[in-house]
Length: 258
Ligand code: LHQ
Image (cartoon, rainbow, N blue to C red):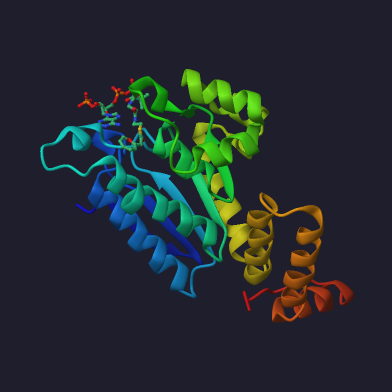
């Protein structure tokens, strides 16, 4: 059985972390397979939105700790350089919206892979844990970058040091994630949201993502210049023309992602 499941339906690419018996903890095989599937999803023009979720009870418990103590297991540098950092870079540079569908506990690198996605939704019973400090490590997989930007310095600092378990409702309140849904309707709501994203102007969303990525480091003037550059590109898409036309004709637009 593959450690990553991948299916395509209605322009949505669903990636499922599939090591349920280990709470979808990442070993080398799963990390490399995830990179492969993200790559496939990025080049497949039938896909206009990507969902990442976990099989079974958890989203992901982060690094498989059995692997790090295994005699021939990868060392920390190769885990970061070859497993997690490429995944974070892929998600942030992917020119399509990536939705984290957090179905259960998300801990360590599992939490931070979710938090680097464009939109994070969670089942009410799920939770987020910066588990690293409990084993003497620092938050990786972009945790020290994204977390303070999502929840502010003080909360990030406390969560990173204490490794508190943050219930989904609280994560939503503090701005760590977008929305929480009741478990009973969670997957249905996730598909609904992905369905909306998948028929939106995909290129415009990609440029939006590019602008938001840069806003973390650009100053105000640099960001205005970048917006100008990206808006110029968005204005040349067929979806922009369709959007304006549909508005003027008082009908629903049909965006093709072009
Ligand atoms: C696991 C794991 C796991 C193996 C649950 N590994 N089996 C980067 C650089 C280099 C090195 C290290 O890591 C990193 C990045 C990181 O991600 S560091 C952080 C690594 N993750 C953690 O420290 C989290 C460890 N797990 C937990 O704290 C708990 O399992 C959580 C809070 C996730 C869930 O707790 P429970 O709901 O009480 O479930 P459980 O503990 O009973 O786990 C269920 C099963 O999954 C269990 O197996 P078993 O055979 O006993 O049923 C666990 O052993 C297994 N599992 N996480 N990371």
